[in-house]
Image (tube, rainbow, N blue to C red; front, side, top):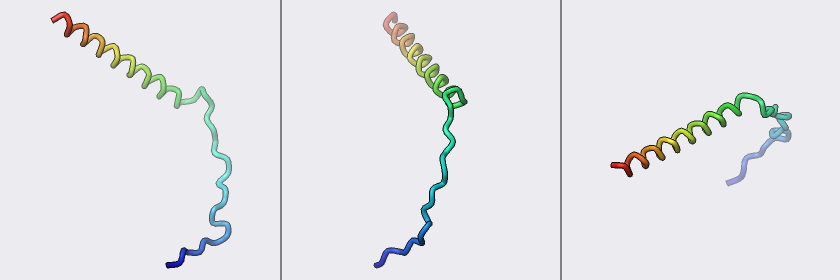
Length: 54
């Protein structure tokens, strides 16, 4: 079976993609996930401490 022919220029450059600066919205997701992780760690530590007292 032969491979299909790809016309010249089928794979052209799309141009530069816009880059985000560090002060935009994706940083908020990082802070939210960090706060969620710290909160879950605190809940697990409190659970362990409460279970040891019983």
